[in-house]
Length: 231
Image (cartoon, rainbow, N blue to C red; front, side, top):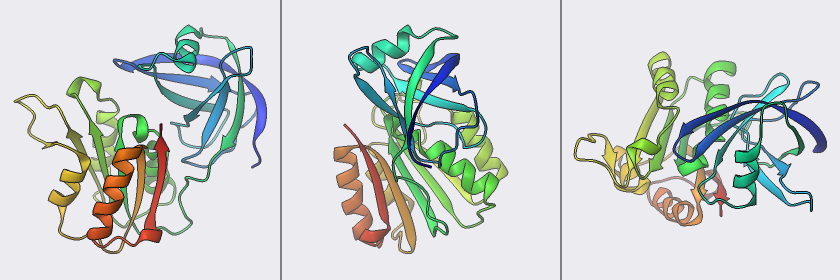
C-alpha cells in the first residue's frame, strides 16, 4: 500500500505510564498497513512532522500510536494538546521493518518505546498466523513504574506456550526479582547460543549496536538481524 496523506480523528487518549500516551485515531475508511510500519503526523502549521510506530494490529479504520512525551519537543507538545474529536493529518503507512512471510524462531529485543512495533508483530504471529515456533521478547526499561502492557504480554505468554516475555530493568528496586542490567545481559543469561533464530531490534542506537554484536557472537547470522533505530 503506497503512503497517502489522510485525515484521521482522535477518538481516545490514555496515559499508560508516566510520559507514555496511547492515542487512538480513526479514519473514514479501512486503513491497511503491515505490522511494524509507522506513520508521520503533521504536528505544526509550518509542516513539521514526527514519525510514530503503529501500536495496534492491522485491520479496520483505527490505529493506535504510543508516544513518549518525555522529550517535550514539537511532537510531544502536539500530542499532549490533542483533544477528542480533533483532526490530524497522517502520512503513511511507511517503513519496511516488517515480518517476513516465513520467519524462523523469532527474538524481539526492545528498549523504551521500541516495544511499540513489536506489539502488533507478536500478535500477528500468534493470533493471525498461528505461528508455533519459539518467540522471545526482551524489553529493557529503567524503572518498574515506566512499564506498560505487562498484563497483555503476560496473557499472551499464558495463552501461547511458544511465547516467552522478559523485562529487564537497568534501575530496579531491591524487590525486583526478574532480569536486571541491560538487555544484553539478559540475552546472554537466557542461553549460550541463539543459532537459528531471526532477531528484530528496536530502540536507541547504542543498544542496537551492542546487541547486534552480542547476537553475532551467539550464533545469529548477520542477515538475520533486522533493526529500527530511535534517535
